[in-house]
Length: 117
Image (cartoon, rainbow, N blue to C red):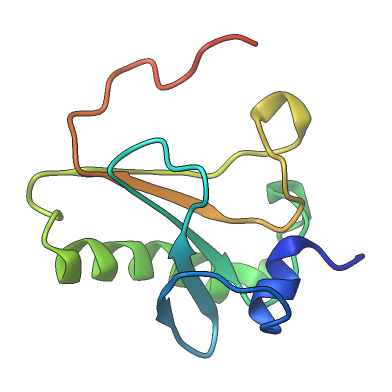
């Protein structure tokens, strides 16, 4: 898999406003926020799409979600509520082909969360 912007952030080749890092993942502020809080949580292992997640990736993918819950609690919006979203491929809205969770919070989020382009 070719390097993506996320690989370059993991390798510190380009800057990011990092809010969490551990052995398996990195979380940072989205540069084009869609809510008052908009973070991206990425695995350090490069996995292009949801379709590429293998059984041996269960731990890291589960860790992305437990990290989202930890960040929500630590930042004080867990009880108010938040949304996590993972897009897959072009029609699903994926722009960077390295799986990532969008964590959105800080306002009441509407439904449906999308608009047709």
